[in-house]
Image (cartoon, rainbow, N blue to C red; front, side, top):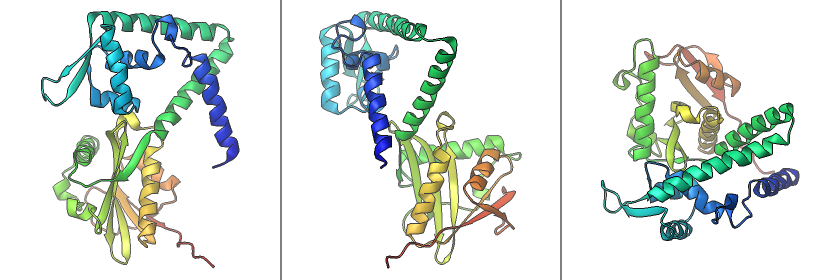
Length: 300
């Protein structure tokens, strides 16, 4: 990794942690550290499962337990078995906790306004736009992409959402039974692979490969959840599929798509796929694409 890039990230981190008060023992002068304040905010009005809290905040179980115990001692949170599953624990705000959360929200608004007040109108606009870009890129960096069995709940969620979206967007709807297959066994190694993208352990995208021996491999089931669009995830999934295919010796990739999916068509063209004559009889396709993958490097 370029040392200048690493140094830039570290300088940014030092500036931000100082400016937002992350180094103070009493965040916003409320007598508790930033970690506890953030947990209060994440629990929210409706409560949240402890497992989900841990995944959303990226905390280990022991540290989160200590934060919750501190909030329980202060009478701000209660942790109890979930009504749906006794093995699942749910954190809920008490009445005092809800009041404390509202106070933290007000003080956070005041702190943000005070930060902006020292800048000109133009600087404020630039800062907020830069913050939005940083937030988007940091969110993109938190996405994990990995092979997933097609029968896994995360995979079933993605595939179901993919089918439902095609059904809404295609002129004649979409019936996977009438489309060229990408069945579970065809997306399971060695016949193929299904990659699933997750953000805070929640599925947000997928893409699959079908292998055909020495013939070109097919890309199937490319989908990104609407909340995750704009993070570059479609391009990342495509790149991961290409890398996986290349590692298996594939030299040519093919895919087809529907004219309603303009953003997908743009993605494929930008990624170096060229439009070719139809190579199958997919009833829902209007465009067929192909890409030659570079040959693997050999050591001299």
